[in-house]
Structure formats: structure tokens, C-alpha cells
Length: 576
Image (cartoon, rainbow, N blue to C red):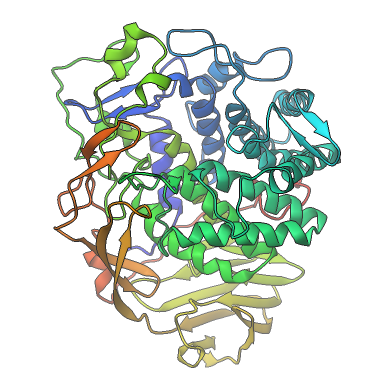
């Protein structure tokens, strides 16, 4: 049995990136729960998804060991929508209107930054990033110490802050960081988007994507007031989420539907990683539990719950062939805590489908997957993977005991099969490592070359001041088991009950209450719709019986060297 690792998950993501992109370089946003299931082209497939898929391709390449084959076609498709003002416009078609939507520009800016870190010599990408930042800047209104674009918005505006900050670092241009700061001040101090207690309403993905940028800005500039405000907002976000990474798609939704969009979990992890790296290392606990559980479980490894019928052919803008295979490696869009599809909601009919002639293609169909979450899930995997261990100032820091190889060390973790991990050190250094806070310090044993090694507590980390090149540290501790009931649901509306079985920080089983409702009122559809919060839900997760028992026949997974090229978290100038 192989140890748990994220490289295998990144490679699985690469499979999807190469399987559901057509010869034109087009992605397919929708996968409908029809019979047979079908992937359908839509307006996010002009800018949003191609940008996410190209960024994801750069992020999986170290694990894959080669470039993703669909990148040239994706790039040709996406880059064809750039205009002279530096922005990327959806074309005027039956499914889209000519529009440089601000959220599209944000996803595009994320991609251009990541690709430029991946390939600093790509002059076309560098110039497009420069022009995009300037194009966004040209659309802004500046008043006193703050700025906004059209209005002080979150999804349309605030989500640009994080990639603007990174653009300032990637391009060595402080102007973009200052611009991000002005937009931050507009939202935090000149709007009512956030309550004094940190509460908010609306698309959780947009809010978390916005505050991640604010954290990055506050860390770079040392603005403690903004750090404190963001911590309050994120604490409130955590209060409506679970310990294992179920983050509701909509905050304070006014109906019976509650589901986790992987995009939202990605942004939650982004905020937590920035806070853990630069504000409070206690947030590593949030990151590890979310990664070990909902993040990896939301990735499709078996799409057998999607119906197939080889006799029904593909047609223009619709792919049905090999659909189960094509979506492997993608991520859940509307998951319940225990399954990859939690709600049977349809499209937002009247404000989504532009052309009446195309309504039959989209209406009356439940969306099984929304593939914005494919790119987001792969990005989330890379974010967690790239932060497992870091090395700075002659100190190796192991933030999470997961398999990882960096130039200075190799970490092998046997969790959840054993409470054991090893750290092989490749140079003389100080070592810090973190064990789950649920484990009492007196239960942790550390040896070096088989001899007991004294450790010192520094916050959430245990430290050893001097470890020699070639030394192997072994850390052992018990994995305590517990059964924990929990409930999800929007405040004042239907609630759904579950029981999680934990082994250390890993959920090894989850049971849904059979009495959970089978329908729920949708404020979008204005009628009851199917919900799957019971034992028969589509795409059941946490089928982890193998994790329940301790195993001694473990084989270390093959890890790849992480050179740290794509780095959104040091908040430093990228290495050339």
C-alpha cells in the first residue's frame, strides 16, 4: 500500500486537462446529469475556464514530468480574445455578449502570473500581463485613498486584488500593489460588504478570493489594521464551514440548499495558507484537515454515477462520448459533505441562457459538475503541495506531515495508516515540524538514526536546533479515533445531519442520516428540487475502509522534486 501523496492527485488532474479540451482548445463548463451525461460548452469557456486550465497545466507539470498536451490549443483559443486595451473579451455569440467581465480578468491575471513564474522567458505572457494590469487600472476610479471599478464590488472587482498584488511582485512593479491597496481600502472602509463581526452574504468564492488578496497586501505593507479585519472575516467564514473543508458556496443563503463548490474551498485554503505563513501558524490545522479530507475526496476518481449511452452521439458543442473517463480528475461543483453531488438545482434560467433558441440545450437539466472547479481543485492541490515544507534562513519547516521532496529534505508520512513520519535531511540545518494539535506533546516521540532526540516547543512547531546532512528523523505518535456528529444547513432553513469517523486528522468514514430531507426549496428555481444528503447520494465520498486499520506493509510513494517555481505565498520576488 502506498503512502498518501498529492502528486498522484495532480497527475489525475492532468488527465482531465487532456481529456475534456477539444481540438479548438475549448473547455466544457457544464456536465449535466442527463441520460446520457453530457458536457456542454457555455460562456465561461471563452475566458474563465481556459485561463484556469492553462494555469492548472503549469501547476501539474512537475508531477507529470512533461508539458500538458492541450496547452497550445488552449492558449491559441484564449489569446484570440485579447483586445488592444489589454483586456480579454467574451465574443458576441448566441451564448455570450461582448464583455470584458472583471472576474474573467481576475482568472486571466492569476494564470498569467503563474505561467510567468513557470516560464519566466515567455515574453508574450509577460507583455500580456503588463497590458492587462494597465487595462484594469485604466478602468478604475480613484477617490481619496481608495479605488473601485464601476462600483465597490466583491466578485466584480475585489477578486482582482490577489492577482494584482502578485503582479506587482512578478513584474517588480509596486504600482500594482498600491492599486490593490486602494481597492482593499474601498471595500473594507468605504462599503458595507462586511459586518463588524466579519459576517457577509453572497458568493463565498468571491468573498474569500477578495480577502485573500487583502491578506497578501497587508502582509507586504505591514498593515495590522487590515490583517486584524481579515482575520475577523475569515473566522466568521470558518464558523459556517466544517473542520474538514466543507465550505458553503453561498454565505447566508436564504433557502434549503447548502453545497460546497471546490472553487470556494480553494479560496478558503488560499486565505488560510497566507495566514499560516505570515500571521498565525495555527491555521495549518485548517489546511491539513481540509486537504486530507474534502479537497481530495471532491476529486473524481470514479464517475460511475454519470449515465452513459454509446448509441447517443456527440454533437456541436456537446460531448457525450467517454464522458466518465473525460471527467476523471475534475472536481465536484456542488458537493454535499459526503458526496460529489448534493443538490439538483438547474441553471439560473433567465439570467444565464442568452438566446431563446438555445434554451433546450441548458434548461431542465441538473448540473452534475461545473468545470470551473476542475481548474480550482488542481490549483488548491498545488497550493497545499507547495506548502507542505519550506526552507528559509537555514531552517527546514515541515508544516504538514505529508509526502514531499524539496532540495533540502524528503518527508515520508505513513498517516493515516500509522502515526509515523520520517524526515531525511540533505544539508545541515535547524528543523521544525508540526504534529496535529490533537496529539498531546508527551505522546510524540522523535528519534534520529534510532536514538531519542530532544525537541523544543515553538508555538505549533517542535524544533531541533541542529540536524546533520544525511540524518533521518523519525516521528511517532498515536492516531486517536473519535466519532463526531455534525450538521450543515443555512441558518433558519432545513438542516442535514451526519456523523464523521476520525482517525487523527483523517476522516475514515462518514454516514448520512437516512432521515435527512430528500428535497429542498431553491430560491433560484423558486420551487423544491432534489437534494442528496442521504446514503444513496451520487458519488459517495469517504470510502476509506482501508484507512481504518493500521498497516505495516507501507511503501513510500514516489515523490517529485519541488523547485518552488510557482510561489504565491512567500510574497517575494519570484526567482528567475
